[in-house]
Length: 628
Image (cartoon, rainbow, N blue to C red; front, top):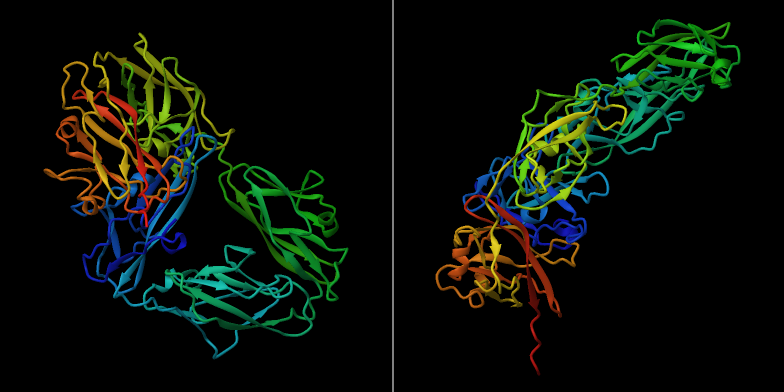
């Protein structure tokens, strides 16, 4: 949820080069998902800077932290994104009054495949000029003419676009008139001329890749069509409607045989598909289907052949098509299209027709390992991240690494495979993960303990299709000795503290006290792996924050400043012992009754051994109303 849609504050920035927004937190952006489900729901957020195929942000950039470090790519927890001081920085390269930050959110609860969507977070630029609407101009000096059954290619002289902020090539043209293909005709792309479209980019039109197909019904006189078009720029602003006039001339009267329908075929690679009257049909001058039409192949069919009643042929009748006896069979190859030029003859008249065939590729070759892959080394009782050096694969059919899937055949004897957004959380046990998960560093082997010094992970690689998978493969795991024990919580510690609304409290040694088991050191490191949240909520609303106190700060007296201070992600036991760690209540009103929030943390000793998923509870008490 973002901005006005959810009743949140607007993200604003001055139109001055280098100007920054306020940090993007739950006051401006929220995520809705089960915050405390079992199994836990992971919410992963990904940001990528503008690239040629993604226009935003246009006049700014995402930066982070006190140093305003430029963020080119980011992947991490949705919830923690709201605590990391992400800001929008205006570049001063243009003067529009709005820009967008594209954020891709991916939810996974372990009960099915991940679900993702991209949210465009709107940034309002104070002092910028309002985005002007595009202007769509139609050349009215002459009316384009198209004769049945040919088509008319559009060009930049017939239609042109003017826009002050958006490059014309990025403008979309919508066909807002409702067109019945048989009655009115339709627009199509030249490489797929049988499929009607209702929108196209201006650069497609300028490159002559858009055509108008006249109606297939028989015409006895000229038809004039007025088709309404609207241009949409990159900021979703619409032009005023423009009307293009097209004149359709009937087929010559001497041509008594006409094509009524020519939609072509869609065939799976190596498969077969019957040709029906919905795909190819003819009419005579009276608009009736002639019964005696014979069709013969004149050219094409380089990737397949036609059959009638299972027998290969180059001739068939329209009656065969009506009875669904004609079939196209694709030869099993790598081509993605075919076409056939047919001559239809009614005895007295004939017409030539180009019948298109689109081949859907079938990914029938399994992905394969890219290299031998290194063995995985894991400390006894610990975790080890599985990276591209251990598992990497290539698929000739796709470059999309999320489509390359690893399926664990049996969980390892001495361990298990887990996905973790943070390397200091337990994560979720999984049996399936993608190569993109490996790239992102989310996949781990966890050793459950025991005396074994070796293990293996048996798996196969697939491309998202059960037919398309490798044979049985194995990742070898070597278990290294580790005599180091994780930190230990000291007796008498209470991981809870009550805090009044609009106040704060120090988390002292009585609330957080962990020590290194071997040397009882105070140097253990706390890492907040999940910032404060309300378990009962389904939205990432403000639930307060942990902060580092400066000197003799009183968290209650300094609440106004501390409630907006930089959230704390790491601190030591020494910080706790010296009273420098505090929790401050949320900036927003918690309501009439007490609300319980919690935060989750890990504790690591000087050897890097950690105890994870430790929970601290914080009841937020509501303000008592004063007696009258």
